[in-house]
Length: 506
Image (tube, rainbow, N blue to C red):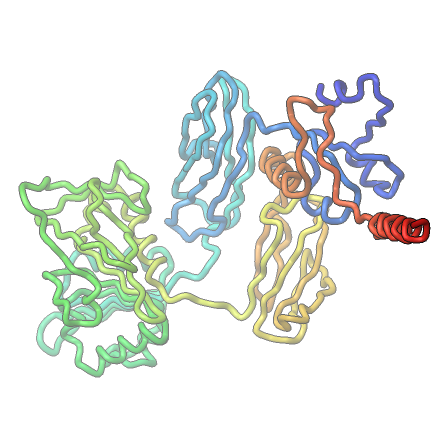
C-alpha cells in the first residue's frame, strides 16, 4: 500500500530486489527502498544513495539464540524476543519428535522475551522446532538444529574420605553417560577402594602432576583433600592454578578458611526455623521439580568475583564458583542430590551436575577451530568459513567433500578464510578439518523471516536517515556531496576586483 501511494501521480518505476541487483549499475535518479530493506552485505557492495521507507515488524520472532551442541543430559535452552502487535495472544512451543517440550504465552499487544527449555533424549543430529500458534493458525515454525554428544566428555577423578551415596550415584551416572571416571575412596587406615570406568587402571597410590594432567576435573570433599600429603596438595594446587584443572569440593564441615581451596568460601547457618525441603534453582531459572530434603542447610556468603551456580527459593547461595589462577574451584553445600535419582526425579539432577561440571572442567583448546558466518547460513547465499589453526601452513580441510581455496590473513598468519555457497538446505556434509568432523546446518530462505527483517532494518538504520513513516512520499536527507573550491574562490576574486576598481576610480 505504501508503494502504491508513493507511485500515485508520479513517474516512478517499480522494480523487484532481484531485478535491481541483477543490474545495480543502471541509471536511476534516486532509489527508494520499501519493505524491510536490503541486507548489510548487499548495502556494503552498492554505491547508490537509498531512501528507505521501512515497514516495521508487527509480529513474529525477532531474536533467537540457543546452544547448538549438547552433551547427553544437558539442557537445550532457547531464548529470544517475540513481537505480538495483534489483538490476540500467541502461544510459543518448543517441540521435537512429535512432542511439545516447553511452551509460553505471549499476550496481545506485547513485545516480550521468551525462554524455553528441555532435555533432549536423542543422540546425534536432530532438528527441533520453535512454533508460534494463534488460535488454530500456525504463524511460524522455525527449525532449531541441535547436535547431541558433539564433544568429548570430561575426565573425572573422584577422591572421597569415606564411602557415601553421593559419590556412588555420581560415579554411576558419569560412567553411564560415557565419562572417564576413576574413584579412590578411603575405607580405613592404609586401605582404599579404587574403581575405574571407561579407562585403563592408572596408579592412584600418589597424586602426581602427571596423573592430574590426564584429568579435567577432581571431585572431592574437605576431609579427603585435607588427608592428602603436603606434596600431593601442592601438586593439586599447581595443576589448578597453572594447568587449568577444575576442582569441585563438597563441604562436609564448616569451612576452614586457612586453606587455599576453601578460603574464598565463607559458610553460615541460617537463623530461625527452616523448612526441611529446599527449593533450588539453577542459572536463574526456577525448576518446580528441584525440591531437595535438607536436614541442616548451609549457605555460602556471596563474595566479589564469585559466580552463583545454585540458590534456594529466597536467593541463598548453596553452590558457587571462583577462578583460581588458570582453573576454577566450585564449592557446594549439597551432599544428597542422589535423592532426586532415588525418587525418579532425574531432571534436576542432570541440570545441577551438568552445570557444575561444565563450569569447573579444564577448558580444552583444539588445534583448529572452524567459525561459520553468518550464524544462520541460508541456501544460495555466501557462507564465510574462518579457520583458526596453530599451523601457519594451509589447513587440511574439505567442505561438502570438496577442497576449497583458502586465503591467508596477512595480519594473522594462522587464520584462513574461504567463501562457500550451499546448494541445499538442512544438515550438510560435515566440514572435515584435521580428521575431525564439524557438522553444520543451512536454512531455507523462508526460515526465520522476521529475524532477517530485523537485521535488514538495523542495516538500513545505520546506512542512511529514515524518512517520516507517516509520509512515505517524503525523501530522506541527501548524502553529503563534495563542493567545488571554485565556489569559495569566486567571491574572493569579485571582492578583490571591486577593491582594485574602487581604488583606481578614486
